[in-house]
Image (cartoon, each protein chain N blue to C red):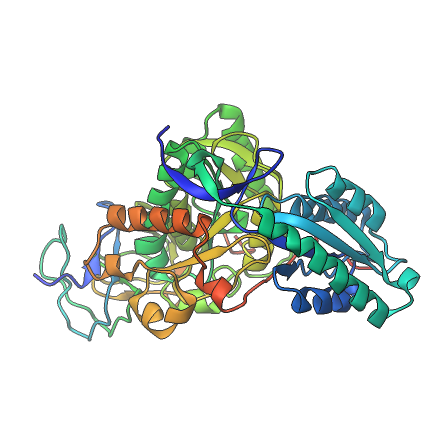
Length: 93
Length: 388
């Protein structure tokens, strides 16, 4: 198995790409369950959801919240500013 | 405690320097040009590039005076030359007197009293040359690592900072603390969302409460501006590198503090009071943060950077660790350590942390950093109040 993403904590809902990933590429990491493929191209260092995340739900990385989802996120989807927002850094919250 | 050593310069007051710098310190922005011309002309001299000193609140002037005095008394500094204009708000004679309380010689030149730019530059170069000659009388001796204070900075972060460079730096911080040294973790605004990790490691409940107060105060200040922080924390470069929110950046950032208890909470530029890991309340701005670390007496600063920040400091060598293999390949001349090997599976975090520790000791023993080789000497004093 050639690892292409890193799962940093067992509670995490996202993994981080350690190389550029093509659309439809299978996610490979230790402790990553099932057959899961990317739904978009994922640049190096960017995040991919490993299970569905509901709007308003906290997104977990390093075992802690990195903000809340602003849209429904499917497993395999790119997670970034288009569907994840900060709680702590947002003046309106 | 262990017997790890490096080759440093033992000062008359018992502190240990890792460089012999003549600090040329303008006491206001109007003296900056003269100070720069002097520092540039004299080998071994460095410009402490202060540009405030006038039209500032008394609180800002007090902090600047105190921190510039600490720069003049830094273990890496063998002598100081303060260059004053003569009419500025910052009291240059007071600054000079405070530096004189240390062991190193201090001189003061006032441009208005000297009769202008050229005369002050000429006299300044003469003085700085004489002061720099004192460096040749110094010899490196074996010193315990417990005499080291090391700053833990990160800037120009990307996703690899939290994956590779910061956890590796955390291993280095643990080694330093185990050796009896002092590590300083700065950057309050980059702790939003990760403060619970430091609070859990606080040596006392009071320190945990203090960490929370400092971080909450920073958050209130940021939110009071009414601005959306996105695009500032994280910065546009952080976002391109895969970091989405300040919480995500913070959780990766806090790893550089390692795993030891937080023994103290320091104000901006405050001298550490005890061995171990201290948290310092500084902005996330890299120049202002590194300046605070240098003022606090860090002899060496380790700076992790995924995107590739080349900056240095006039007084303390700054060594660069990137966790991004592409950045290392692209900016090799600005980088000291390629922690990208961790991302590529060629080294473990523990191995990389050990390598950083060895390089910190080598830099403390005289090995030049990339930022020194390329001539970086950045400086920025934090100013909290308005400019009048």
